[in-house]
Image (cartoon, rainbow over all chains, first blue to last red; front, side, top):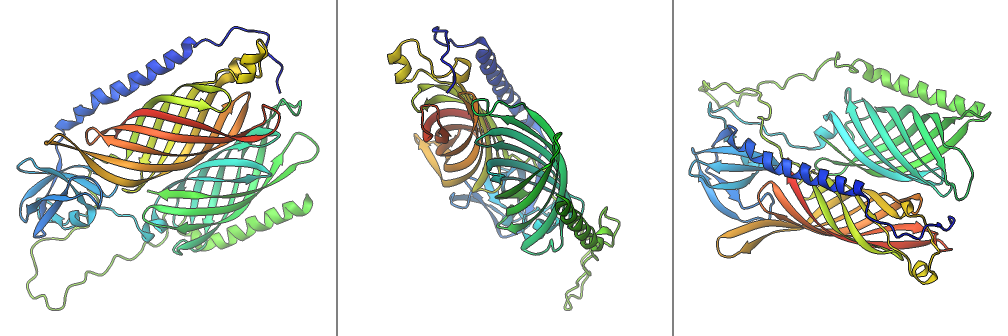
Length: 264
Length: 226
């Protein structure tokens, strides 16, 4: 428990928080006001090749089909949200069409349109990946975010940022990893990883009188990526860290983490 | 220590050996997959003049990100309720799932003990500022439409979220689990209003023994898709 403060003046709202709020409001307003500027863009248009194109009232399977566009008519594609496309017919009707139906449309020159869709193949071949993992880092809780780029299906480079929350100390860690997958086409794909980075440790002042430290770390690890559905994958890994401290002995820390990621 | 390093180098060796198979592909120099043979249906007699080309996805405006701000009330267990405000960013992965990052800030009031004891303070004024961040996975569990009058329909979503984060309060960063539900009301296809209820759970030992506290928050927000 910290020492009782001598001051008896109740805390008053500080001006800094008002500036914060003002900045937020200004940012949101700016976004709102500039948004309609895109409305005048020219849209990509496609011709309906199936007997008809079903338009729904919202971007989801449950929304009702309220109208159809007949074969041969042209529609403008206004935007895409997840696997749904908002389209506008020549007479001004607007609705949402799912990707499977959009695949059956043609470009103005009668060539086929290819809309990308995520699947097991993208699990192996996608370039970018980002995820969130959590677990145990030498007895402390750890929350990690990572982003990865695949050089090829077998090798990828990842950047990690972690916050460590323990009973005796808190801290953060940043590292760069190289990940090697031996069987990237497998639905359950094991990997090796190797990396280096820095760790910052801040002892809790109420328990230990210690100094903040920043040390280099190196680590090796093994894990598994499991394709779940669409763009999702689950990931679990074990890493063994060596913290290169300025003291005589290096520290060794074991880490277990599980979490999810998505590729794009 | 020594054996630990040996293990480390052994693993490096294994990785680099197993990587050999992949090395030829490391920077895309390797053999690309053979293009699929142009499969002509056997029965086709007339060759259509239309040339089929491999075309990538056309440039269509993707609006999968959602960014915005919120303001509401947050109750900190033992410390009363106060105004909370913050910012949110979300990425919609599928029509059901989204990931979300949230930062927020509020100020704690006085505990009953502090009020009754007069001058005694458990924590300093600067430690009363509570800031948090959360990383959540969300699921649109009840998508729907609401009707206002006869001629207006708006899309809505009831979603559930759960995630992890950290809360800085009373002089410490605390590992925080947060769960909640929210209601998204799409004013237009790109602007949404939110009403959210969340529970932030973390361990605190400020009042003697360590306990898990529930800190309830409800807020109103506005977001823009881009």
